[in-house]
Image (cartoon, rainbow, N blue to C red; front, side, top):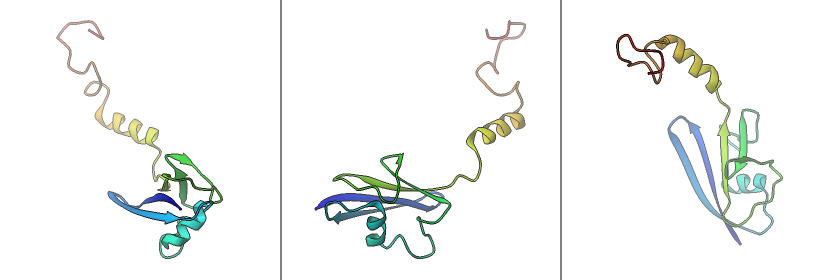
Length: 110
């Protein structure tokens, strides 16, 4: 027997953890079906979800080992780089950043 932990977030700021005892050689997809997570309103095997083991992408046919943490990720709605650029544009270049508070008549960066 191996012990694994299944983790998912069905909506923002909600994390579900489920520890399981499984047989040796169990795959990721089999672990999800044992937990009942492969059916229902939130099906992690459908498009829009990505699965991983300890933060690295893993296919549903990946065999699990003792102590693995199986994680299910929702797809991002916004690219983090685009969101940062939009925040910066909204703040303006002079009011944000490392050198926003500088002494009067000083050189840039000092």
